[in-house]
Structure formats: structure tokens, C-alpha cells
Length: 396
Image 1 (cartoon, rainbow, N blue to C red):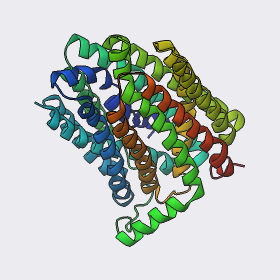
Image 2 (image 1 turned 90 degrees about the horizontal axis):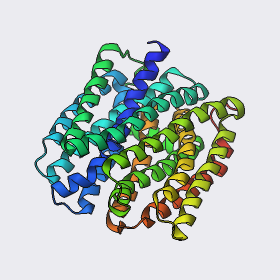
Image 3 (image 1 turned 90 degrees about the vertical axis):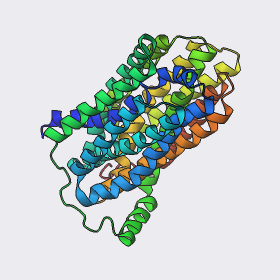
């Protein structure tokens, strides 16, 4: 496969995540009203999806180490297409939650394999740069998804917005089926043996490099999910924005992330991983602290939230490529298992946040702003301590 094809495939596989969540968010309030469902049940369509996403990676990872990336991608993407169609046709909230859960499990195959593919083909340091390019593609998809979801939801219905997920997944499946060639250099025939699998997982979670970069990726994703899970209700129901306006706001949020991935590549070339992550930790902490302080001072408006959020997303665009590549870097023969554990930790944090928010969302801006402040502090702590002690394998 050519380098450009690899980046395109990585972008589509990683892009499953923002398409599944970001495009859906502008339609969430209308969907909730359509089914006359409580807010906690609506949040479950996100949190259940993410829990399934995290747990499924623990299965997909060893399977991909045993059988290869290609068959797992074909099975996972096919299941995603079917679950997307069923979600569009769901007659009630209960069945929508079921199919969104299946969708999350299938999404795990694509995102997990994308991280493993990077380790199959590149050294850890090269992988961080390639991952940033793939995540730039994710950023473009994330830019398009919210305004498209808002427009489709406002002009047609939430079902048409969900139909866009089906179209995207069909395109990704067609590209993988026709152009993707296996990247796993040697299949691990012992990958599914319980004793070997337990030893592999134990080795991974004990590795200080994995712990450092997984702490960073988990904290960074926890902050992102706090914003994703609360922002549609805060901006549409609390601040009175339309679904279309909210979609444009999410476009700007994703654009800040996209710029962060470009900043990541510049800082990696100039400073290396440790310094890049430390600088990005400053952006995260300044953004989260500024948001919390402004809201506590009584500034409850869109700009008091979004200007600090842009700083947070710039940092997020640096943290994710470095941390996802770094967590998998020490394990060339168990990249699937390491990618799965890293992804599981991120989504476990997201599920915990979503469950807490489903109970504590109080039609104010406080859960969003204070939640972002909390996660920004954890990001800075991981970036300035754990990562500084480790760095990527091969980095001086």
C-alpha cells in the first residue's frame, strides 16, 4: 500500500469515532423529545456505545494478533453497517440503545486495528508522526460531522442524520475490502491461549511506558468526552442555540483539534515527544482552568466556554497522536492487545464520566466547565510527570 493510501485508511478507521458521536450529537435533543425519553436514557445511547467500544477492543485486539488485521476489519465494519441500518429504523429508545451498543462494539474493531496497523508498519517515533496524519484526517471528518448532523437533523429528522453514519461505514468497508492488504508481519498463534493472553496483558499493564502514555490518553479523552456528552444540552437547551448553530460550533471545536495535530508534527520535529507533550499539557491546563474560572465568575455564555475549549483542543491534538503511538510502541508482537488495552482504558473513563453526567446534568453550564477543569489538571499531571520519565522507545 502507498503511504497516501495508508493515511486514507487510517483516517477512515479512526474517523469512525467522531462520525459515530459528533454527527449524532446535534440530533440528540430532538431524538430525546421524539421518544419522550429522560435525559439519563438519552445519555445511555452514548455511554453504552462507549462501554461496548472499550470492552470489544479487549476481544478484537487478541483476535487481530492471531488472525490478522484484515479479517477483523471486514467483520467489524460489516457489523457496524448492519447496526447503523438498525439504528435508523429503531422504533423506540430501548432498541436504539441496543443497536448503538452493537455499533460501539463493531467500531472497536476499526479504531483498534488502526492503532495496531501503525505499529505494524512503523517504529514508535515514526508512528507518532504517522498517527498525527491519520488523526488529522479524523479532524477533518470531525469538522464535517457536527454541522452535517445539525443540518440533517434540522432539515429532515434525526433518523436521516443517523443514515449518514451508514453511508460513511459502507464507504470505509468498501475501501478496506478492495484496497487494504494485511500489515501484520507474523500472526501470533498463541495470542488466544488464555495463559498466554493473561501473561501478555500483565506484561503490558506493568510496562511503565504503557502506563505513562495510557494515563495521558485516558485523561485527554476523558476531557473530550465530558465536552461531547454535555455540550449539546448546554448550548441548545441552556444557552438557547439552534441545532445548526451548535453544529457550526462543533465544527470550530474540531478545527482546533485539527490544528493541534499539525502543531503536533511541528513540535515533534523540533522538540521531540517529551517536550511536545509538556507544552501541550500547558495548553490543556490553561484552557480548563480558564473555563472553570470564567464560569464560576458568572460568565455563562458560549464564548466563555469555547475560547478556553479551543486551547484544550489544541493540546488534545498533540496528546492523542503521541499517547496512542507511545502506548503501543513497546509491543511490536502484541500491538493488537496493547492497542486494545489502551482503548479500553480511554472508553472506561468516558463511560464513567457519561454515567455520572447522566445523573448530575442540572441544566446549567457547571458540569461541563468544572468537568473540563478537572480533566485538564489530570492531563497536565500525566504530561509533566509520567511521560517525562519515559518518552517513546528509541527517543533520547
